[in-house]
Amino acid sequence: MADKLRVIITGASGMVGEGVLRVCLQHDAVERVLVVGRRPCGVQHPKLEEVLHPDFFDLTPIADRLQGYNACFFCLGVSSVGMKAGDYYRYTYTLTLHFAETVSRQNPDMVFIYVSGAGTDSTEKGRSRWARVKGKTEHDLMQLPFRAVYNFRPGYIHPLPGAQHTHGLYKALGWLYPLLRRVFPRHVSTMQELALAQIRAARDGYPRHVLEVKDIIALAGGNA
Image (cartoon, rainbow, N blue to C red; front, top):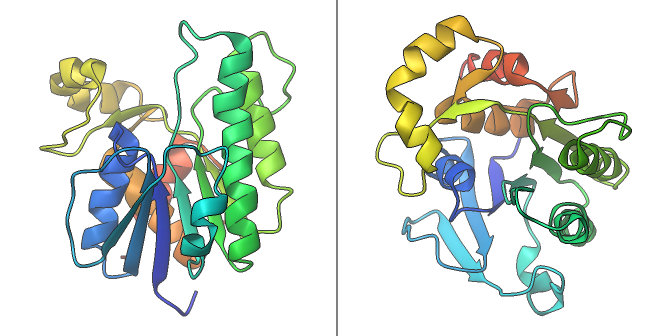
């Protein structure tokens, strides 16, 4: 990609979105960032613009503000734990596809990156409900008229130092990170690696459209 990245980020008030946002704001390849969220991300930066919008199922009021971007890092997601099947489908599949369809119409040359998860079921036929829904989401995103779609499947993510939205589990296991990285190298990455890999996929492309942890680490290890 010749142009610098102009990135839309969702989920910036969550752990993954916050990390991706922080790395994007410091990266020379990123010219501008638009955060779209339901509540403030709590970050101020010359590159950053923020749009607060309560209903991601109706983006009509803000559609014009989504124009002029060449990448979208979709980091918004919900846990299936304790959630009814219909609600999980609506907030994982329906919401994601609606947002993606909207930004694809506004930005025909956009690269869309979806943060899915390790264990996602590409066959959509397995026993795990969340994995089937994520698999369908990945598949249908790739049918949309983007320049490219990349589905990222991180496993354990070691958070950035000082992050405000780190999940309790990750805080509790943080001291184990060096051991986890050695014992489970195909399942463990850092937030820095996840964010850098997204930036590089959007800027330079990648030969695979589903990126497992090993792909994320390999892509992040290239030259900035």
